[in-house]
Length: 262
Picture 1 (tube, rainbow, N blue to C red):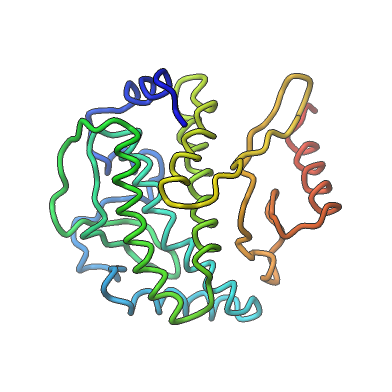
Picture 2 (cartoon, helix red, strand yellow):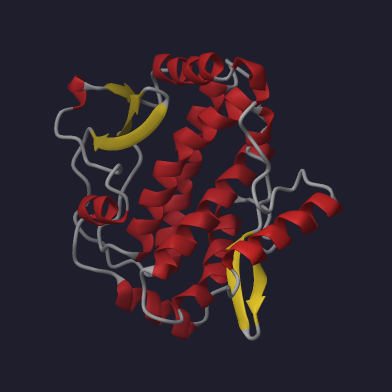
């Protein structure tokens, strides 16, 4: 759990700007759309776009099978809400809601968003209470997505939420890299706070890989497999939990050779 000093640091990092421009600065594909009627939009109460997303990956990689198509669709559906929730909690004073949230679907990719109702401008909630409120919103949104997606293919709730955990951990590291020195030390307790709020396992989310004397690289220790290796052009991710011990050691060794001192 975060201590008082860590909470104070997080509060000092928040900027008096809406979420949308901060999101676009982090990733230009996270753009607030002016007119959603010009796009195919994913909405919690309209499953057609989710079916379209699933069929895209089914047609793009028929060899990978229905488990991959479902997992790939799930990570597409959830990455942007995760990123926006983190920005709202720690980067902006604007507290977002996912009650009237829509996402753009274009050729199998989900990026760009729209709110059908105006958002609350600013909130004085402390970081922990913001996380609690946003986690409840995310849980509701993800329940809708999972219900729609599992009409197309198989995905257990526990696996789906472990994939969300990996997305949280990855985005938290990315945000920490944009913050003042020392912010990376907050990654583990922040991830644990989100996982606890979302009722996901709170096992360590990161792995420190030695690259040189007194130099480590922090990477996400994945808790679920994205099944990318099911594709003909796919392979295991660096810390994929599906790897056996020998494959794991080989992946880490290759990473050290690539990123270590030359």
